[in-house]
Every structure is written in structure tokens, then in C-alpha cells.
Amino acid sequence: MLKASLPPCGACKYQRKKCVNGCPFAPYFSSVDGFIEFSIVHKIFGASNVLKMLSDVEESRRQEAIRSILFEAQSRINDPINGCVSDVIKLQQQVTLLREDLATVKNQLIHTMTLYEDLLRVTYQCQQQQQSQSNINVAVQSPYSNNSFASTSFVNMNVNSSFDHLAMQTTPLMENLNPPQFFKLPLNEEQSMIPQVFNNNVPNVFP
Image: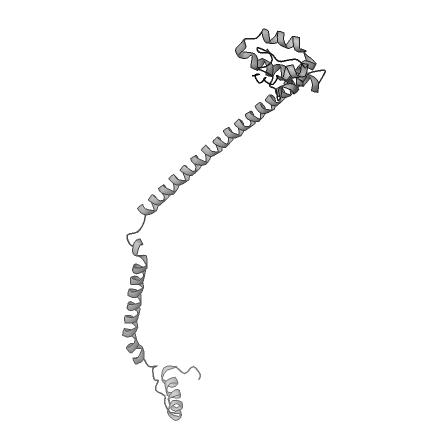
């Protein structure tokens, strides 16, 4: 009975070779996506150079090395002149922008914290002033301040009653006061008395 053969890896499929047991590319290039990935790497570096680079790396880190080789090959295809250097420059620019944004956010945070502290201080001062003012008002408050309406009504009642009592006492007196009646002499007697008074009191200055 014949054993079922395993599908070839992507590298062997690309090279149209029979994939044998222990193929150095099989762990890193699968039969599904490995064909396209190995085609990119082979186009830039070649199969022999990829094997040489893998042999210089520890086995535990070869998977990372394959990813780096694939990234550099794709960058070289996208930018034949600069290759992955252009990607590194873009990443550095992004890092610089992010650092500037981070510094701006830190400055805004510091400014906001300063404003918040000032607000707390002003609020505390206002509360202290209001408390001290209320204490002063309580200290100088009159004993009748809590019953100001009653005390005012009591004073008005006393004043009104006093005026009413005075009016009751003075009313009979005012009613009894009548205008004086002057005695009037008859006209004949008045005329007769004028020469007598004049003759008796005033000396005769004429000869």
C-alpha cells in the first residue's frame, strides 16, 4: 500500500522541485502562502543566499530572520533605490511627530492641573470668606433680630396707642375752647364816649 505524499512547501513548489523530508525551507514557507512569499524573496536575494543567511542565525530565531528577509524584499520591490531605508525614515518621522504630540499633551496636562489647583485655591478662599462673614453677622446681630417683625409691631402698637390716648385727652379741651366774644357798644354811646376820653386824657394845645 502506497503512503500518501505530503504537499510540497512553497519554496519547492516555486522551484518545481520534489520536497523531501528535512527540506530547509519547509518550516518557513507553507504550501499555501509560502509560494508567493518565496517568490518575492527569491527575486531579490535568491535561494542560495537565503539558505546562507538562515545558516548564520540560531535556529530559535530563524523565524524572525525569515520575516525580516521578507520585509526587506518587499521594500526593495516597492522602492528599488532606497529599499527598506525609506520605510525606516518614515517610521522615524512618525516617531518624531508622536514625541511632539506627547510633549504637547504633557504641557496641556500640566497647564490644566495648574488651573485646577488655582480653582481649588480660589474656591477655598471664597468659602473661608463666606464663613467668616457669616460669623461676623451672627456676632453683631441684635437680640430681637430673630423676632424683628414682632418687635416692630410691638413698637408701632405702643406709638399708636399713645397717640390715641393723647387725642382722647385733648379733644374735650379743644371742644370747650370757643372764640372770645367782644362786647360791642351801641353806636350812639360809642360816639358819645369818644370826645370824653379825648378831652379827659389829651391836653388842649390850642389857645
